[in-house]
Length: 200
Image 1 (spheres, one colour):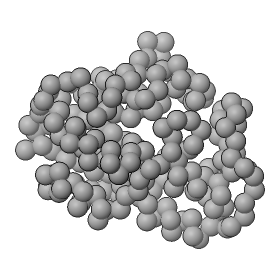
Image 2 (cartoon, one colour):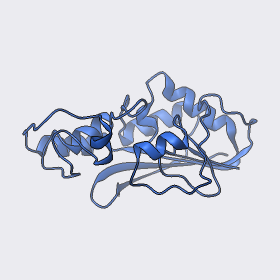
Image 3 (cartoon, one colour):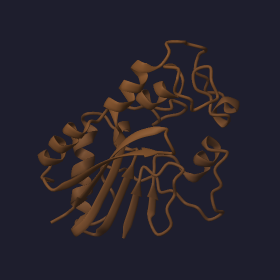
Image 4 (tube, helix red, strand yellow):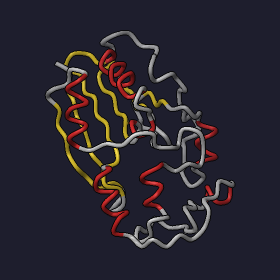
């Protein structure tokens, strides 16, 4: 069994895709994304998943942990470790907070407009006065990278991550042998930290 937790619009074949929003809401939020007719998203409680201990071979949780509170963070990690079989793999990625803040500080402080949450703005990917992923302005997509999309429940970022924090955080839940990488998601857009843990 393989889980894709916090899948958003990124459904994976061969995985149980899990999120707070069902497929109908995802189709509305991401009108430019094509979902198959039989696509399904399970709206399970990610802190109490309906699977037995050590029953899952692989768990992916990309761009999820930043949406969890400080209190929810350890509860989620412990639930993932409970589910993993011995030799099972848990991978996740989070925005690289240090690198995003550096980009934000180097950008122009040129505010343009209030963020919009109407259907037209969401479908056109409206940030603060822009319809672009351009990063020369602090108040466009860079702000969303720090605080989340904010176009619906569950979109806000409640947490942030650095490589040092991740190493310490994982050791606190008993994961001392982790592989950490840095990568850019979607071309030159999102500086990310990737984490891989194989359960002993």
